[in-house]
Amino acid sequence: MVQILGVDFGGARGDNNTWLARALLDSPSLSLEDVRRVTRRELTEILASCSGPTVAALDFPFAPPQSFADFWAPGCRTMPELWSAASAIEYEDFLALRDEYVSMHGEPKRACDPPESYSCLHMVNPIMLPMTFRGMRMLHGLWVGETANAISVPPLPQYSRPCSAAITELLEVMPGAVLRRLGLPYKGYKGGARASQRRQAIVTDLPELGLPVKFEFGDFEDVALRSHDGLDSIVAAVAAALWALSPELFPQPPTEGEEGFDPVVLLEGWLYAPNPIETQ
Image 1 (cartoon, one colour):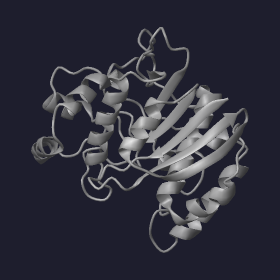
Image 2 (tube, one colour):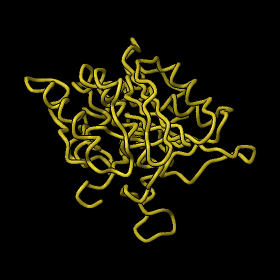
Image 3 (cartoon, one colour):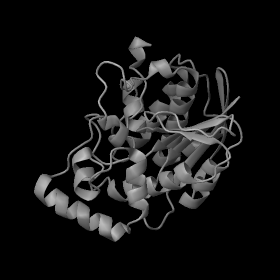
């Protein structure tokens, strides 16, 4: 039995738009237990106190592109070093650094970012920067804190404590990228004239794709149809469950010592989305 968490992370100062989908994976069945809004503090407490093996898929950039990292925090070579740097600065100062950098260099993406994504330095709909900053600060607290489970953040080498048998894995996901890989509507389901129809198509078709994970929206279908953020948290949970069952379904970067290894992934991270449905 694996605890599954899917998170649509809200970075706004008001902290009223983070959604959490909680589920249990009893292979191959995924049972949704709760889908609701939480504060970032609540989410941090939940992630820090998981009991037993857990996979959490988090919808925010775990780190900025290397060129901005070199501008902001020169000398950092891994995500945890950037998380520590984020914890030592205020958002207003981080925003000022972003503005100065973007005025000279624009908004580069990371090596792992797909075509449909925005740079995590983006500030106009979607507003990516505050969720990147506040997400990094949360990850820092989890990485250095005394959590019930050891924390693992692929593609970093596994981090664990000898006293912990269980692992909480934290994956960076983008629900739109997951939907695209699965052949489902990945644009226009959040707003616009046909948004409700596209959400209905996702809710109808996702459980019928023949994935290794078997699940139904059940009592949470109405939430998914009403709230694209709630739907994103459920899509993230499905991605987390797929990873828990079959990590080989996900493209992954070469690890250190393997041919093609690029150390940039240890700094920028990796966005996890399953292979296209037709190849599974």
